[in-house]
Amino acid sequence: MSGIIQKYDEATGHLSKTQIYKIGKLLENNCIIKLNPHCYKSLPIKGYNKSNYTINIIGTNYFTCTCQWFTMKKLECSHIAAVKRFINKELEADQRVLF
Ligand SMILES: [Zn+2]
Image 1 (cartoon, rainbow, N blue to C red):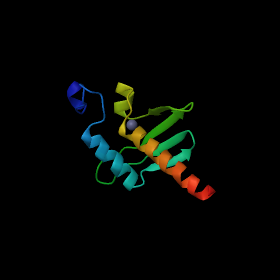
Image 2: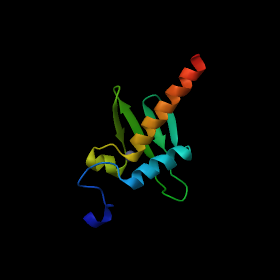
Image 3: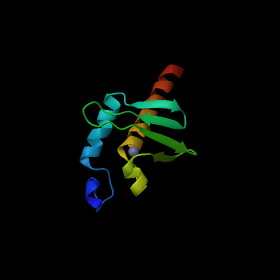
Image 4: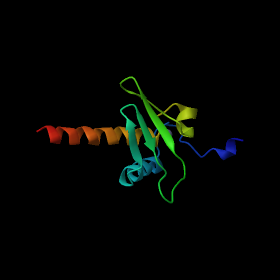
């Protein structure tokens, strides 16, 4: 059954180049949707995949995701990374409104 699972970078456990590319795509295509401050959704990238994932924030800084990568590895996936960037952008926008 192990053949079904896509190749992961076992050696480093870090995000691969394709994942970094995917994070950019997720943000570019507005695939990250805020449901509430503790729950985000990652929508499919057109022509790339068809899966919806839910990203939950537990406490202040623990992110979980429903995708296979996170479920198996308990490591930050591209969806979590994209949500973190999304939140940072939102904070920057808030600061602009304030001043
Ligand atoms: Zn994920």
